[in-house]
Image (tube, rainbow, N blue to C red; front, side, top):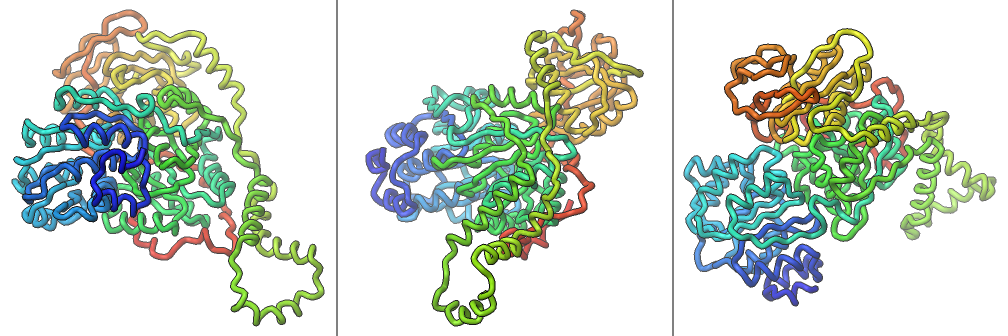
Length: 632
């Protein structure tokens, strides 16, 4: 269906036609008729990259009253990148609409400039919750005439800990308004917002709940943990024209991986929360213009990136919250184009794939890390393709041909080809000569997985494996059934965060709000330290020896016998695998917002001494201007 058929006004239609849009995408075709013809509350579930900005932006631009300068539309989104993207898109849509002023409001930019713009009058404000709350507290915004509130990427705002900010902002808006909620996934927290702030919303769902895009193919590679970085390089070499995002869990790991890629000759850079706004803008400008082929980023920093035609998304590590995988993979395969999402896993992480498959309702294909010979063949053919398709400037080169022909006249065609290939390719061949196979045979794990599936585990608790030897202690872990925790996930997190393959794990008891896990005593402090800066659903994960006295912030003593806790927090009941009644607090502290973590896990094999060869084309050399990136 075309936008003209949907009833878009001529001046707006002219602007979107200049942008190259004619036919509406599915979420737009479903949403536009509802919003253009009715004042309603709306909940729309659609994947990242499906055109949600136009779905709410076009009808709101068409419906608001331009006879005054009062703000009528407030759009809230989780990150400054997404805030800027939405504002720019709406400005493009409203190019020929007189009086349609649009202001992005986000942290990292001058608040004084934003305040002055608000005083002049703005019809549409696009804001991040943190900065908008700052403006409310300063008394610098007037929401008395707000008619429409849009919550874009609502699930991610909640994941980032913006619940209190959203409650405060929404309470400042008029009761008589329309609220439009757009989300890629629909966890219970998003449903709660819909219940609390929306009366009888119209619901639109494109695809299944929390489903991944049909345009994305999902693959995973199995490697040893120490080979993760080598596998990333091998994948990048096998796809010479790669243009993608590499996702890491923490800011530190993001910076380390980017630095190693740059040092090894790849066209890469980092994007994370420790960069200033100027540095972020500089990196993003280089990435959009393809001066960078691989952007290494955290989940928070990569939200809302306005980048088209990404070929790959690479999960250097899978996210802690599996719903986040939907957002990561949705960065590619946009606008009806095909994309590839890759996960690099070690053996102990393989169980996560089944959980993600259930989440996104898509299957992963197990792929093999290319061998050195396969990489060389792919690179060589890519180079030959470039030679075949190069634009030749016949006029300029003609004057040099006689001298060139004279120098090469003793070489026949075959020898000339051999020498040309050798000149360009010798370093690559040398680098991959004798390269070892990075793939892992996982027959033992497959047998274990089949055994685990054969005996369905009780919700009352579980034991992954019996202790093998040594003394064991019991750890309290501040996650439980309400965090969708299963024994495999706890074990996987321990493996990921500690990078220690010698930790023995005994009995695991999972309750509603927290869990207990037995580990060998000499590794207990390693685990506690590894979880020190980790988050679940926006709050820190508390891990401590079960009979240790908690600090004053948590209060009370956690009983190793499973009795009642003296903690003053609200108790939740649960039963262990032994059947005894165990109660205790939630085990989590209230978290600071928007934390990305400050310490990373192992980033790969640090023992390598060689770096990646590059061809003379220079397309993988480090571009100038990247030296201003801030180091952790």
